[in-house]
Image 1 (cartoon, one colour):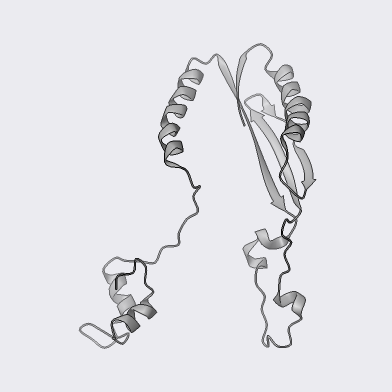
Image 2: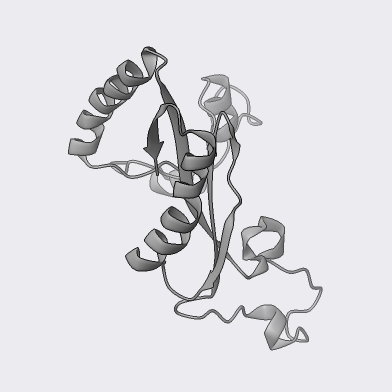
Length: 174
């Protein structure tokens, strides 16, 4: 059993044992694992950072904290998110139910996917003074630098800063 992760089904095969072990015949390997406090856990998603980014994070956070500590700056946060135009984002829409897979239509059985699916970009900025009017754009590829500067920064963010934050210094995080 030199593998890092091994299912209980494969554990039975690799150790040449049946599911029943222990003092009584109704004690399965899975039950023993539960008794020992070992439970199956689902892996959580987390961003993949490089070692350099991980080392820089505390320094950047401390610098931002010290900047905002004097209370003479206002924080404005902007972010964008891409949403696909399919119903695949809802986990219950990823499968299907059927009693006979041979009679199920092909368009139900198979989900045809594009190499670069169409997406909707939503960009928004917030501060303690309010929420900026969101920017929506339907794209087949990621937003480019020119569009981001013109549509998000120049037409929205700069007007927002000039309208609500003209008397104080602002820190903008995007």
